[in-house]
Length: 65
Image 1 (tube, rainbow, N blue to C red):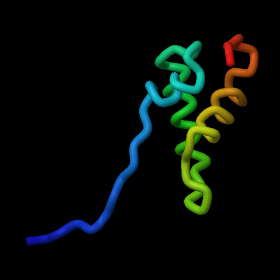
Image 2: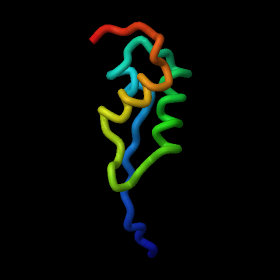
Image 3: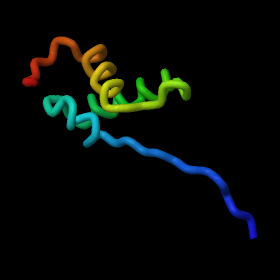
Image 4: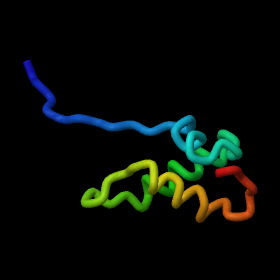
């Protein structure tokens, strides 16, 4: 029997929409893709980074704090 010794943390579009509820599913997916492409294992991925990528990709979309 082979035992895989690994973990995985997943984020989804609903997580992105928690920090930017004005984004639609396609926009939220774009944010996740950007976060994945620029992933730095020494930093990880967190709420602040999701918000950063969302605001960087969609700065002109109005949203409420």
